[in-house]
Amino acid sequence: MQRPLSITARLTLLYTISALIILSASSAYLYITLDNYLKHKEALAVRDQVILLRHMLSEVNDPAVPLSRARKWEERGVENRRFQSRILDENQRILAESPDMQPPAGAFPRPSDDSAMLTTASWTAASGSSYVLMSAWGKSGRAPEQKKIIQVAIERSASAALLEDFRETLLIVLAIGFVLTAIVANWTARRGMAPLHNIAAAARRISASQLHERLQGSPWPRELEELGAAFDGMLQRLEDSFTRLSQFSSDLAHELRTPITNLMGEAEVALSRVRDAGEYRSVVESSLEEYERLSRMIDSLLFLAQADSPRAQIQKMELDVPRELDDIRDFYKALADERGVSLCFEGKAAVQADPILFRRAISNLISNAMRYTPRGGRITVHTSAPEGSVDVAVRDSGSGIPPHHLPRIFDRFYRADPARSNYSEGTGLGLAIVKSIMTLHDGTVSAESAAGNGSTLTLHFPPGVGDDLAPNASRSIDAAASRAHDSTSLATAVRAD
Image 1 (cartoon, rainbow, N blue to C red):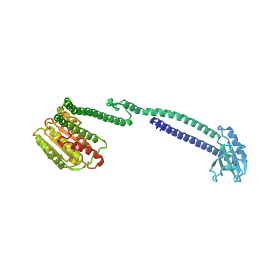
Image 2 (spheres, helix red, strand yellow):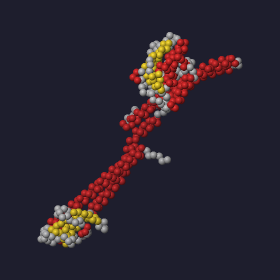
Image 3 (spheres, rainbow, N blue to C red):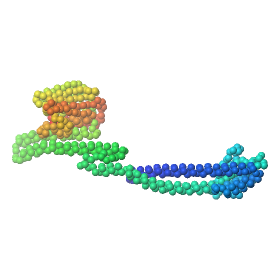
Image 4 (tube, one colour):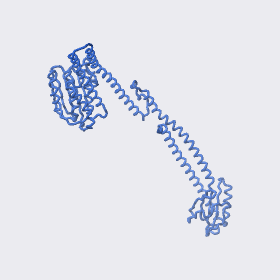
């Protein structure tokens, strides 16, 4: 397959063709203008000769006299012009003519009846010589009642030679202009494309270890400023994603290492000597907790991977928030009583959301709040509908979150309390899942807290999100949410630490 022309080659070709068209049009205009000027000048010369012969004919009776006098004047004249003249009577009989007269009498136009009008024509001889012809009425001096026909011709050989020389000169100029234009156009195109080559060179210098470099530091042309800004924005997004991915990989390895190390330690202890069936059973039972934690983590990671997919869509329907919260309250009531925490649900609203994902987001927030609310504390779920949107806020009276932790509590595997990093019920993914769920709903989740004064995490569903989106595409996300939801109880489902 033939490679397409480069932009430099295309610009060079376009510049050259454009210049060639302009030069050709200008040359053609100059050539036509010169040709018309020469024809006009020749017509004026022939007219002057006709007027002269008419005047001399009116003073003499012999038609040959004006022709003879005119010939002498031509020989003494400054301009190199040789007229060919003829005088005829009204019956087209030749009375006198120049010795070298070439055009026949029939080639001349018939003179106009208006004596002031002079009629012109052109004629080309067999030899290729062209002539300008003009005829007019005249009168003899002694017989004014008898009209005479005056015919004058002038050869255009000098004008033709001048035009031919001019045409050859124009062709030479066009050829030289074409070559010079191609050279200048190529140089101009290369200079114009230099910033793009600089951008390409800068892009080649950027690697995974140099994502911090940017292009905006260089003075790019105005047309490339937007490209440079877009490229820098892409680099910023790549750097952020690469940083998050590196941190996520490190956190994931750390989170997986602990349960696997525990399982390996228990297995090594169990295999260190021969044991009875009861001891082996005890080892397997003690390992179930780690297996459950690994299962929850895998389900959560699967959900996050599917939620982050650009094709991820969900099935939304209108939900009665109080009714959904009643189901969640019934489930958490026993756990709250066991921990000595009171649950309170306030407000009414209807929201367009995926039922499974909505319940999971609320459950993760309540589980997170219950984990850090001391005995005798209170958890409040407040629903409101400001300006058509729906806000569901989960408040607790726990220890709160220090301000420097708030921007990162929705990051994966991030824990505000390092002392709880090995807490068996948590995986550090609960709030990250809540954020992904809200992103799927075109909403947001925010956190407000002060150390010692509890925390408030708010789900904000924007107005106008009630369109049903791709039911088939949403099944995989709902299925992942259901697996993570059904694989364990709500009290121990995946949630943030």
